[in-house]
Image 1 (tube, rainbow, N blue to C red):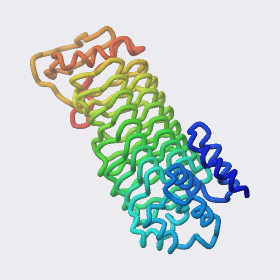
Image 2: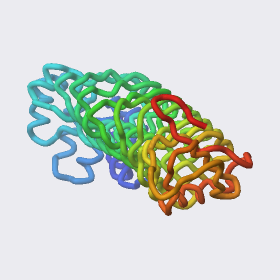
Image 3: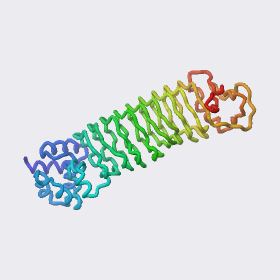
Length: 358
């Protein structure tokens, strides 16, 4: 192995545009794993260590003992510790590691299996980002936090069991996980941030047992998403935009944000537990299949109504002898849906004790 060539590559790896190819060359030339090579590049660029001495040690198989890895960890050289030691119970416990580092194995195309040990309760920002061949991830129920973009673009990951203890999921945590097909949201999660599942094109089912706030683009372009089980208390901008197979949704949100259901072309059923006070522009643009809107919230004010009341060119309300408030809080909702359905008329009605009244 030509060490001088290796040092040239280490220097060239500072160029972001060619970094990935340099990393591959270094892995092939040195036999080191992806994480260690990336750590070596970082050390070389910082020039805080005698790089030749460290490099010689890394090439020696006898260097890789738990004792030496603990010394590296305690001396701030954790970046060069190979991935396999983070799956070693003795090392993780002795080093008292409870959090997988930020960018832990980011971009590692060789990683296809990883076990998160019970003593690790937090997953750092970008920890597994762009690990495109990671297909099996073993988790446990003590994990409390998943960081920003932690699993972004893990394109081969078909499933992940979220911990019952989970309290935080960072923005973009699973965006681009193209094979992820189903997700259950734990009880302690009350908000999914921006882009959490953006672009998860194989995601079909989302299940939650409690009300949940959804940020911007949370499920955007989840083309195969069909069912969302649970109540949604806030809907961010473009939250479900492009979910072309979504056919039913239950909402208790007072605000439906810009483009929230844009181009949900198969959306047929909407249930409002609370009639929204504001529906922003293009919230239901392209929702051309809506046939049923159920309003569980009752309004016993202002109007005594009989028969059908026209509220828009394609909207009519059948009050079924109940008194309904059709004041300004209702009109934005009607305006948002006007001329966005193929049907000339459909009924908006309440449900009472499980029985529809039409």
